[in-house]
Length: 418
Ligand code: HEM
Image 1: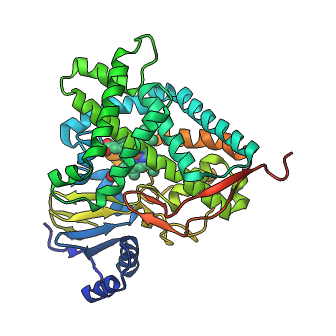
Image 2: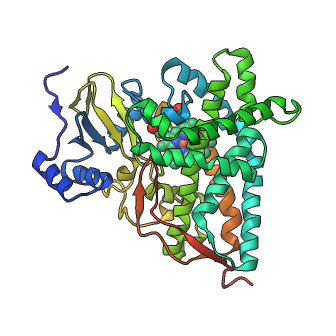
C-alpha cells in the first residue's frame, strides 16, 4: 500500500463516549460523526472498526466501482431470505440477478404494468368507499396492503387474498424482530420458528399453484423461476422459496413506507399537492430513503481518496445522511419536489442521490417501485385530501426508516372540487 495514505479521520474517542452517554441513537451518532469529520468518518461502534461513507465519490467507490471489495454479509437476513438474490454472493448471485433482472426491466417489466394498475385500482376503490362513509383508516396499513398486493400479483398473477395477507404478517414480524434476535443462528430461528413455518407454508402453496397454472396464462415471476428449474438444477424449490420471500421482503415495506411518508409530507406541505407524482416520490425518497443504511464489509485492504481502509472493516453507506448533506442539497431539510423537476438544476451528481443504492447490487425493483408508486398516486391524489387525526412525531430507524406511530386519517374531497 502506498505510504502517502492516511487513516480515515475519526471523532476523538472521548467525544464519541460523550455522545453515547447522552444516549443518542445510531442515526444521530452517525450524523454527528459526519458533521465533525466529513463524508468518510471512522467510528468505534463495537469490536469491528467501522467507517461511515456519505461522500458521493466514496459512495461510488464502494457501491459502484468495487462491489467485490465491499461485500454484503446479511447474516441475520439469511434466516428469512435464505440464498435469495438479496443475500447471495459470487457466481450464484450473478445468475440469480440476471434471471430476475429480465423480469424487472424493459419488456419484462411492461408485462407487470397491468397487474400494477389492477392493484392501484383496488386501493382506489377502497378509498372511494372511505370517501363515501367518512370512516377513519390507517394510511400506513393501506399502503402496506397496496404494496403487498402489487408484488404478490407480480409473483403469482393473482390478487392478494385475505388469508394470504394475514399469513404474510409473519414476514413483517420476523423483519421487525431481526435486529434483536440472538446472534446464534439456531437460537434466532427458534425465536421466530412459528412465523417462519407460516411463511414457508404460504410459499409452498404459491409454488404449487404456479406449477399447476395454465401454461397459456401470462407467467408471473414464480412461473419464470419454476421454468428456470427445468434448465438449471440450482433452482430447487428451496431456492424458489428464497427468491419468493426475498421479493416479498425487499419489495413491500420499502414501497409502503415511502408512500406513507409521502402522505405525511404532503400534509405538512399542502402547496406540494399539485406537484408531479414522480417528483413527489423522488423528493420523499430523498428525505426518507427507506433503505437508509447499506452495510458492507471490506474483504481486502483498500484506499479511498487517500484514506486507508483495512480488510475486516465494516463500511456503512448511509443514503439518509448523504441526502441531507447541506453541501450537496441546498436547504436539505426542506421538502421541495421542485428539486426534481426537469431542468438544468436537476440533481445529477452520481452518488449524491442513492435511494435505490448504486452499481451491481442496486435495487432490482427500481422501475417497478417507481411505476407502482406513481400509478397509485395518479389515482389517489385527485380523489381528495387526507385529514390526519394524529400524526407520528418522528421516525423509527430499523432496517427501514418508518414513521414511529400510527397514521389514522379520513379522506375529504378537495374543497374546490364538488
Ligand atoms: C421505494 C421502494 C424501494 C426502495 C427505496 C428500495 C431500495 C433498495 C436498495 C437501496 C437496495 C440496495 C441495497 C444495498 O445495496 O445494500 C435494494 C435492493 C434490492 N431491491 Fe429494492 N427498493 C425498493 C423497492 C423494491 C421492489 C418493489 C422490489 C421488487 C419487486 C425490490 C427488490 C430488490 C432486490 C431483489 C434487491 C437486491 C438486489 C441485489 O442484491 O442484487 N425493491 N432496494
